Length: 272
Ligand code: MG
Image (cartoon, rainbow, N blue to C red; front, top):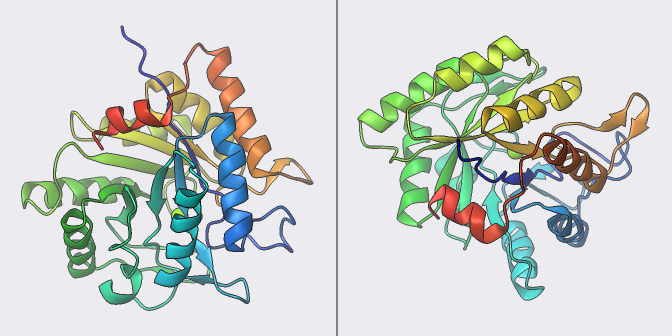
């Protein structure tokens, strides 16, 4: 069996981490770009980008996304740029959530269902999903389907049938988000088995499920995401840095004999 190279995604910031929760959280444009650069040197080929306003709160502000993307280009950082259209940045409309989709990103996250976060609803109506997907394709941006639960995979298949999503699909199986599918080996195998044939997938393991979920993904032929968006501590009571998290997963991949993809190889695997 041919071993496909491993795509490592960095999710440096997310919506939840703060400097108070972890002082290493990058929140300004410069801090975000700096972590992406350092992690690229360690093996990362995709940057999953969230931005924060001047008070450090999550936002979908197009001008902030533009600054991050521009700085990555200006600094010649050869990386796949993936913007987040996630639900915690403000209003639930395509105009707000998808305002950055006309920028020159390669990919964007797309949740294909709704769920509960600990203190809010992750609301993604069929109309919103359709509108975001249409805007992505019309700007040549490949969706990364964020599935927090198996029903979101079923929804993606329905959108595929209707022609709203286009093959080959790429998924991010986000395991262990509080309120969604728990990060257990059985659950991850079930999620993987539920994917449409010919799709590619990345696995994110939230909190303490991370090492187990990512190790399984590497062995099962999937790809991996890490970063402070997904896990704040490298071990109990010790704040992680993005670089430490990337190093850890790259070392696991080496130990099980999975080579790391370059950005060019990642683009080929994903059909970008
Ligand atoms: Mg995200």
